[in-house]
Amino acid sequence: MQINSIYKWAENSDLEQSFSLERFNRYIQWADGNKEKAFELYALNTTISESFYTPLHILEVVLRNRFNTILSKHFGESWYENEAIIYGNLKTKLQKAKADLTAEDREHTSGRLISVLTFGFWTGLLSPEHESLWRSALNEAFRKEDGTGFARKYVTRQITPIRVLRNRIAHHEPILYWNLRRHYESIIELTRYMSPDAAIWSEHHSHFLEVFPPDGITLL
Figure 1: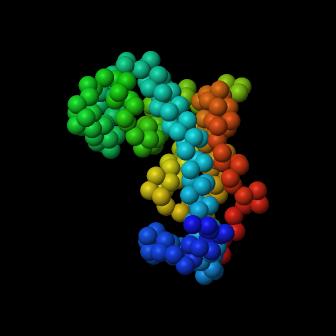
Figure 2 (figure 1 turned 180 degrees about the vertical axis):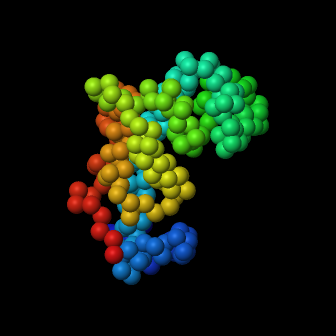
Figure 3 (figure 1 turned 60 degrees about the horizontal axis):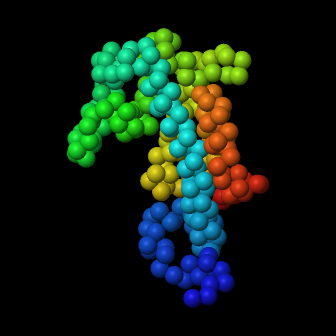
């Protein structure tokens, strides 16, 4: 089938029903009732969400490996069994990770366990109740070029919205109303503080700057 304009075609298709009226209504509102424009925005949301995969992937992998390396140095390879570190919600997330490995009939090796612990687990180590852990160990993970570090609150303020953005993308939610350029810059910045080389790799392979409109996104 020849389609001159996929968005014009979509306006008269069943896609609106397939995408869910409730979900798609947000885009119609942004487009001031213009359904063709709404489908353009929907496609843009998908494209930009896809472009975040590489920088989010690199940030998460580097974060968990940096934290694991540092905590292993200070508390031993099985630091995650230390109840002075892992308690409350973190303990629940750890138990779920172990249950998932058991369900897949996989051995609970340190490497496997570290790889299945969620992003929420790792960012949970930055919570206020772990301030002493930050001061004694985890602050080593983030360093400026001159070697100086950061307060835990600074890192938390940067990474918390990134975690929310990551979850919205994972659940296919609208993200166009966010300050996406700033979030992208924050992801690269945090990655650079942990591993300058990983940040270079992330920027090289990311398509965000290619697909994000140079003049930003206008929503009504």
